[in-house]
Structure formats: C-alpha cells, structure tokens
Amino acid sequence: MVTTIIDHRPDIEIVGARVYSDSKNGVDVGTLVGRDPIGVAATTDVDKIVGLDADCVLYTPRNTNLDEVCTLLASGKNVATTAFLFHPRRIAPADRDRVLEACRAGGTTIHGNGLNPGNLSGALPLALSGMSRTIDKITLQERADWSVYESTSITFDNMRFGRPVEEISTEASEFLAFNSGIFTEQVWLLADALNAGIDEVTSTVEAVPAREDHQIFDHLLLAGTTAGQRWKWSGRRDGEVLVEIETLWTVGGEYPGHWPKPQDGWTLTIEGDPSMRTHFFCLASFTRAASMEEHVRSASVATGMQVLNAVRAICEAPAGFATAATLPLIRGHVGFGNTGA
Image 1 (cartoon, one colour):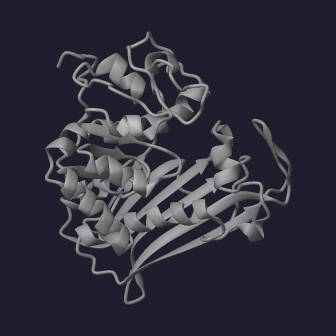
Image 2: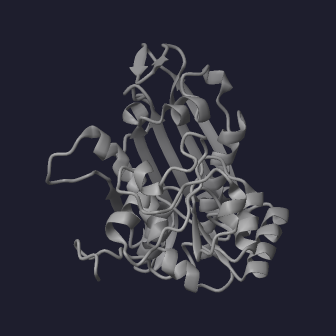
C-alpha cells in the first residue's frame, strides 16, 4: 500500500508509519520500500503514531491488538484494516462495545476487509445477489497451494503446516482460532445481509499428511506431517447449510484425491433462481511476462487495495462500524494510469 500511495496516489499523504524492528526505526518510509525518501521517518513508538494528525490509519499487522485500535479510533483517526473486524456485529459483545465507544469518542469509523475473508466472500456475493429472485445456498471455495508463498513464518509457524496432523484443529493455537473466527464472521456477514436467518456457524478442519518430503524455501516439510488443510465454515438454519466458505489449502503440491476439485483460485456459487457461478483468479498479468514472485504477490496487492481504495468512503461514513454490506461500492481511484484523475 505504501508504494501505491507514493507511485499513484498524490491525493493521499503519508504522515507516519509504524515498524516492528529496531533496524527500521528512524528510516525514511520511502527508503524502506525501495523508493526515494519522502521525508517521513518510520517509528516503533506507537505513541508517536497516535500523536500524529492523520485522517485514517491503515492497520495491517499479522497479530492484532484491540487496545491499539481503540486508542487510534479514540484519538480521532479512522481505521481501515485487513486484519479483523469484518463483521463487528458478531464479535464478542464486550469487544464490540469497546470499539464502538472508541469510535464515539473520536468521531471515527473502522472498516475491515480484504480478499477472503473480504471482497470475494462479501461484496461480490452481495452484488451478485441483486440478480437473484430467490437464494437457496451460497458457497465460496478457495483452492490454493502455498508452496510458492515466501512468508514461511505464516505457512509453518502460524498455519502449522509441517506439524503432526493430530495437532491441527480449529482451536489448536491462538492464530488458528483467530483465523477461524474471522471466517466465521464473514459467514455471518453474508447471512445477516441477505436475511438468511441462520442460527449457527460451525467450523471444521481436516488435516492430511504429506506422502513425501518437500523443500519449501528454508523449511523442509517432512512426509507424514501436515501438507493439506481443508477448512469449512458453515452457516446453518435448522441444521441446513445455507452459507458456506470452504478453503482447500496445500503445501508441496500434493492434492488429496477425496477432496473436491474446483479450479485454483476462488469459485463462488449461488444456488437459487437463477443459479450463478463465477470464478476469480488473481495474477500479476494475463498478457505480459511476470515472475512467480509477482504472481504470488498479486493477491496481497488485491487485499491491500480493497481497503486503500475505501479510505475516502470510510472517512465520509458515520462514526462507528462500516462493513462490506454498508459502504458504497469501492472502486479503483487510478484510472488506467491517470494519476491526476
């Protein structure tokens, strides 16, 4: 997002950036991202960020901190995040009340969105639902192999690939429980927005072992350890699944024969009158030559742009929570390279 602002968004000014390592503390933000200096030094000091005069904070840490978010909101800064709060109505009531009170104190708004959970499991199905007479079931399937994803700390430390299969569960670690929780929120978002009347959302995960060893960047994934995770978040009414998100994630390129076989990417199916299906696939380009690194990074770009392009709408929204179901349609702001638009 920083490079996008520097390269393409003269309407947005960067006034500060928080970093998490001493080696980056005090370094110019432009230098950190491979651009010319912009005259703004990054800092590890949260209080310095809180003290800045800013309209909006792009909050994208790996591990969220509700205290930090509430402090930012209460200080008069809107917050756009890819990390959590996709559907605040369904988070713990005590947490929801804290965030809402911070929004009231600062006259601010918070919006959480991304790719999935996010646009593909929120704005897209909601937009397509406008062509429906009736809806019976909505399903989003994500199929991805993480072997080329260079952030191995997420793959192996957070998501626990390469660990014994019996150690994988919806509550196996704080991160897995948190990750499951934000997908659960997303199912509730769709169900609530479309009046599905579901009474529960359940989460399940099936872990499958690797048949052979795989070298994944600096990690060796051993045969017999977790190489596949099939997650399901199912929203039910009277026991019938009406809204479901399913992720089919592998590392090492081994795909279990008993799993469903959608195309790589994201497949959204709306069963109803009429029934609809759309497939989404994200690459750096479909026409020019691009490296695998660029292709892998493209999904991260899409995730970040979903909230960066929403900044103006977030700042203009009433104080409180804004979701994919309540904000107006978010569009790109750079028209075909026309940065002056």
